[in-house]
Length: 370
Image (cartoon, rainbow, N blue to C red):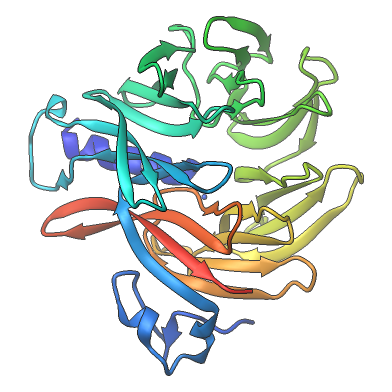
């Protein structure tokens, strides 16, 4: 596999992990791209008064934001030269912190091996991240920023799936392609729960106050949502046949997920109340993906496609109380999850673009008013 094919596939995998209104960035039915500076400055578009700032802040793919919104964690790498046949070892992958106030990059670790999907640990003094030498073969590591120490977390025999969960005591839950859910810390593997080799674990969330593991897994090529306690007991299917990732509110009482519509290429975005059985609220229908709760839980941000064949994405905000939704970005090739600033009406995300025959991911900040 050539270097460019391999790297483009990684961008696609990251994008998958990380899947009746007036348009904010559309005038006369002509979509505005993120590179179009007139988006921020066109005074004729009155609805843009809700958008205070919209700009590129640095190069890279955002993976996390600190609890106070001071730093973002991101991966930076060499530009992808579409015509280049360079050897993969010529590329350097950099795991970095970007301080939003200082507008400065602080490099954490550099590696010739691909780094992938990073998360701050509970103390924010270290970073969990994935590393892979071969396509789809991931291992989980932890890096101490203060001690400059790299530690392997996962066993070499585990084929780790990218979406893991970091606990408040700095332990981590990760899943494997052969149906194992593992609890570990920086020193040891603490527990292995074997669901069965016919389950391919996709995403994990742990409710510490409930002693509840909520996870999605593929079985017979169908992605469903399951739950059990931390000992592997009370295993049950919660929701059958969902799409992509789910998102849990900060109060841990609600879950966002999308589900396909039978005999259609469209999906429905649902809100699931954890404490009320059989209470699913239909939020919208279309091509929604990667929906995330705001820090207060009163709004969600999500991505949507203009049609099923498009690789461009629009950003929307939906207010849960009155179901009002607003489009705040359009025509984007997004390569990351959406991240809310914990204290401000501000979203961060990465989008890639091709310039001078190179592909590059940029981190963008979108600041808006209620």
